[in-house]
Image (cartoon, rainbow, N blue to C red; front, side):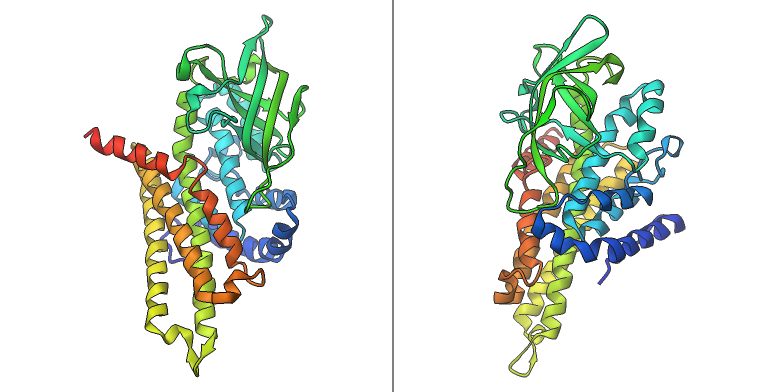
Length: 382
């Protein structure tokens, strides 16, 4: 059943209904075959972009929808309840526009944001490297000034969603040998010479969200595409990750909601010993626990989003939301497979896919061990 929501405005309610309609008509009929065939959902992103769903939290003056984050995240959740790979892609795309929207000059915003927010472009977020995941300060990809107002980028990024499919790459690279203080941010166009891509990783889930290494071999980028000052890259990356974690929390919640809905429907329809299996208290209580987990996950990400919308600090709450929602997704999808029994272990139902997709939510945008580190530091700092 649809999640119970309290939207802040009538416009937000209508936006959510539009999202549900698009999910029902455009996404649901395609998702099963596309995931089995590992197809990149390019047309689906175009559809969402044309509907304005790829630019919700950004200013209207640059092509966004000017929606609060709590609305944007609930749209992501609704998409994830139908197609998790696409919801993750929406979250990643939103992340790619964040440095320009937050730290860019007026000229950069006017030059770059209309394309990013038009729905016609899709972005990739190049932060992680083969030997630099959570340890951002250890990245080795380097941007060297060429002396004519340009930079030459050399290095390799890893685990990059949309690699080879994106229209631009929001890239973090080293401009000085001063650890985390030596990183800078660049917007690299997809047609830049020297930009190449490895074969997509063979993953256990999210088969329509291809991730691959992105190689920069002397990629020349104009200085006008450096966002902020040299050395501000790590600050931008960490700030963006707070928002990105909320995107993953919302997506994980949608995935868990989908698993719960499927499990509840099966338990009602499936009869054994002359009655629905849902009439067995042990199973009914399991479903009650699943509902409590999903509702709790939703509450945590909405609380963090409302803090962000109010202009208040939300880093700790974002980490809590990411931790709670993704752990809930893993538990709820696992329990949903158990409710279906042998049927849940087959590809005849999407529950086994949900369970595989849930696992990675505990890993990307900072592992849940990193979230615990972030949370504990905030709490113990007083």
